[in-house]
Image (cartoon, rainbow, N blue to C red; front, side):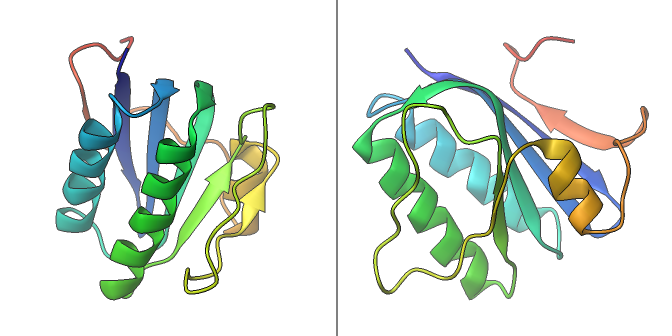
Length: 129
């Protein structure tokens, strides 16, 4: 099983939404999505996990690696709607990763409302239209 993703730019805020299960088989695809995000934005990134069904230890490590990679580009990573089966436990050398209960709360923390239609976005073929 793998994941599907959608990356939306809303002014200087990037929103990477992930659907599926972030397990060992999906880490490579997730890492590729993070590469896409690094290349196409400059501000903080909210990782929207609303449609994520769960994650493995490898998936959690991939998220902490994404936080490091984004920090290396001068960008922060925040999580919205983490799976109910656990919380992310970053290693001591990981940048701070704020966690929001849902996407609306994460957007409100940046002074934004719901993402309007028509924003610039990229997605995998499997992402629902």
